[in-house]
Amino acid sequence: MAEGILSVVATPIGNMGDITQRALETLNSSDLILCEDTRVTKVLLDRYNIKKQMISLNAQSEGRKVEHIISEIKTGKRCALVSDAGTPCISDPGTILISEARKAEIQIEGIPGANAAILALSISGIPVDSFVFDGFLPQKKGRQKKLKQLAEEERTVVFYESVYRIVKLLEELKEYMPERYILVFRELTKKFEEVWRGTPEEILETIDEKKIKGEFVVVLSPLKWKIK
Ligand code: SAM
Image 1: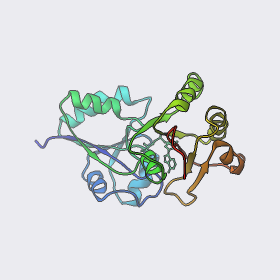
Image 2 (image 1 turned 180 degrees about the horizontal axis):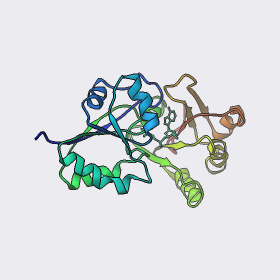
Image 3 (image 1 turned 60 degrees about the vertical axis):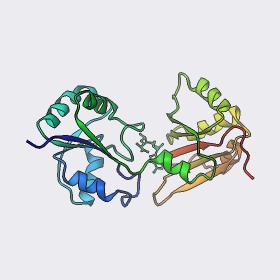
């Protein structure tokens, strides 16, 4: 019997063309596709005419579904793990599955591709030889403490922020790090991609809170760095 495998496959973060040849081959040769939201992954699979059984695996269900998935892989199935967008496990589900698969000595392969944080860093124009990735900042408890820590952070910082809090975040950054040069990327790789750069106050002046939509990555320049 052929050995099963768990393939961790990166998918696009908006532009459907941003998927590798190897990702498509892997999805095509999988028996099962584990995805956050089957409706989102179906759009990608339909675009590339891939028809496969899908199982949803999200933050709520991951823990209780892991045992079943591991047993499927042990019977020889090829499983591909994808998330709604970008690289699985980066502020997305999958870590419990991968950790259990490692304990079960299952073969795991990674199929690299898009990631919103890395893309933002790579086009930021600020030093990124050393950086901190902070996922999503805490929404309530611990948020102020985290902002204070970030104000002292010497390295470049990158994190995700939701449309519901982006203006609030800029107001907080204005309070905690008024002089810091920052970049706010919206809708990377998509039709309405946009970037704002400057101090938090400068960005706040140009953002129209009522019209703002989409997905955001925020990059903070290093503490002692100044744009020339
Ligand atoms: N795993 C994903 C990755 O590899 O980038 C990130 C998943 S996280 C749940 C989703 C967040 O990533 C969004 O709320 C947004 O902050 C950021 N994001 C994802 N796609 C983006 C895009 N095209 N433009 C800007 N931000 C994006």
